Image (spheres, rainbow, N blue to C red):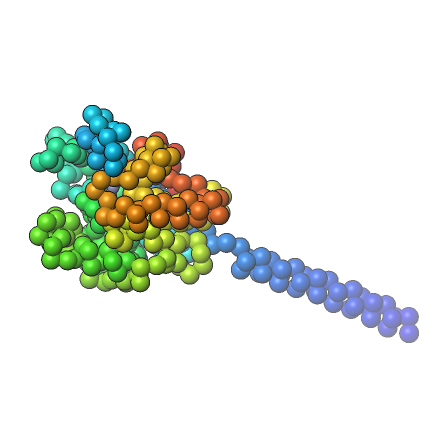
Length: 293
Ligand SMILES: [Zn+2]
């Protein structure tokens, strides 16, 4: 009897241990499935823009006689469910030019050192590895290497698509139209926000005004925390501080509304704002192959 009791005791102690172990495994699995997905943000240099007539960046004469050098960044976001290229830098036709190029009106002097294919190679990627592409908007300094991504799905607001493909734009801005015309895999967004991977970590925010379908990008990173890539909501700090609107914006009132929405959203989320054309903000980011996570 004593022997039986002892063996029962051993069995029950063993069983108890098993249960504990299983509970621990279940808890571990749950922890894993609840953990936020690992998202990485790579920043790249898409060229340099010298704004020779800074007065273009305000409705008044505040900047008359001034000039400013802008960064022209683009980004790759790597998510467990796919990859997104955000913005397209300056035209790749500038790569290899001995001298920076100045636009006929003298407003901008631009240069670009390297192609997107070479730059992606530094993180062991090719354009074929990019599932989605999205541009903050379709100006010349944001769609430079767009046509390298004909196999990717272009995420574009309906209003921006109609604007850039309109007959009028094809005539007045043939270079911009040509920069996107080979893109055939298109996912049009109904002029609203768009959660790229469905879990809230990478969200395109519809913020029109600079162009009819201008958008910014929200990225929620585990270590760094949430951030916003501004597109051309503001080109430099002073314009953010004083809410100044460039004279070439599509709609001033709409821009001001989007500025208010942008600031409200940034505050709600506690998101760090990176102005894409700010050299200071570009310097804050690690450069590929390093990344933020
Ligand atoms: Zn721009």
